[in-house]
Length: 173
Image 1 (cartoon, rainbow, N blue to C red):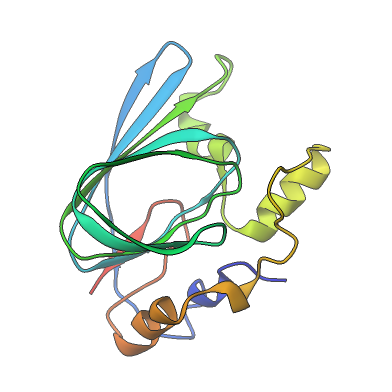
Image 2 (cartoon, one colour):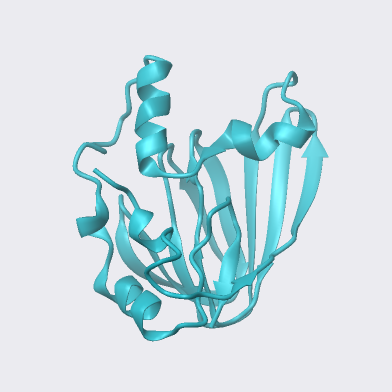
């Protein structure tokens, strides 16, 4: 099974990559990251290993996750993201997004993204097996067939979009 790999293959559509800089905040066993995502961006996020707070401060987008399907989000939207979450989004307005993570004090700051995330649901499944972790959600059926038609249509219709290959990288329409 493949997760969102169809968006990660450069051969599918010749996309244009943009870089979105994360503003990082560090506290006692806490890591926060703020993203300012421009309107017209199509992004695929990394798959998160741990539960964390996720807050859309402002903006609007269509978001899809394997666990919840497609949702339209607008304005302030706080949530607790479960382990295994991977988001696909098309941003209709400039959007500010903040995530907050509990971290172990031994985590090296330069390796924080790798410690918190993996690049795909397949990698997440491997992580669970290698660490003998049971998952509360049924992730056994997640694969490319779960990707919504609107996300496929965006990827196929606009040659300027580029799916990401690293966490939080994204592309502008």
